[in-house]
Length: 488
Picture 1 (cartoon, rainbow, N blue to C red):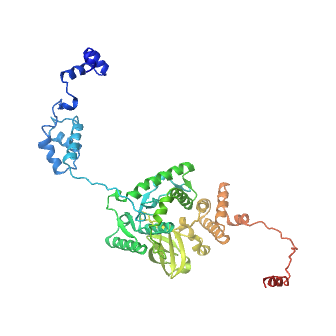
Picture 2 (picture 1 turned 90 degrees about the horizontal axis):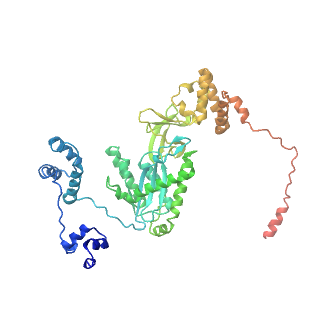
Picture 3 (picture 1 turned 90 degrees about the vertical axis):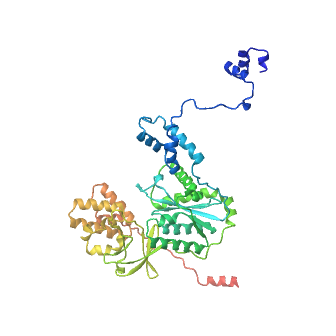
């Protein structure tokens, strides 16, 4: 307006940086924009004016969860001449969104918490299949148990082969507490709901009692987040994603996601978690001062099953057949079932350990057999090998299974069984299971059928000639008297 005193309207508008039309509007109403009431209204008729209040609003008030697209389809069915297509769908979505914001039901509010040192620890299980880890070229289906302290974010991670069971929770939680060297005041988890979700009422109550007894042994308050409210377990839920991202990046740097055995993968996870925990040492020192002391001993972290060893040389646990030494046939064993193994006891004497197997969904029996338990019987009855129900589980390594495939294809059944049993006997008697597997694979690569007698010659160590006369200097017994005199 100062420029307008000396220049034309066009020049003054150009000097102010806006159009001549804007200049005419400002001169017509010299009030400031803050002093003028904005005049805003619809430029086109409301396409929903005839249906919003009489048709759509009662539906929204009856159930606010109805979606805008559902209302659109309702209008197309009831008034096809007015709404033949989705032309007003975006308008309807904005109208429903604004109605929910002004008149919809109250929504839940998340209250962020300030963690206290030593107050709370959280546990969770997370699926690790997205990492694509393989063991010996075979995909590994597993989960990760994740323990996190809410204040310092110190974590403990374990590879879990089974599901979210009480056994997996109790075993790995104890390992975390004893690795930490202290006990928090409260332990929060949603694992219990996962553990007994598919169980009957009696089994679910049993799991709950065992978990409460477990926490009482360590003096922890047991708490659970509300079902479906994952944010209440947020301190560990967020760390789950961070952990898997860190593992994925570490696997990229490693250049391979294949590991020789399960122990190598577990060692890889432990090393990564140890590096992550080193960055939390300052906060952990503060938290350690607030933790309670560990009890004098650990508590039960397994499920006990009583099983009888049958005449077939084994026992059943959760529909899986495990072999046992034949001397135990007819005996009742107490079997401790862990997440990754089973341990059987005769009274207080440990007698059998097996890696744990899981039953199949199709109902077919799963077998876990140690050939050393039955090799003495196979010596006397080698023909039983061909039709044995657990023949494929009997071979200790894949090379032995390949040898059986080659022998059974090239030889009569009788000869193939005898040769295969001879190979197993050689591995057992000489304690050369791995070395013999290498020789078997070498024979198959050369197109030869493995034979125990020939392979045993290659296993024998070379004879070394010892010298005939080896000088031996004997110490004079009287020289020990000098030691006694020196002590005196």
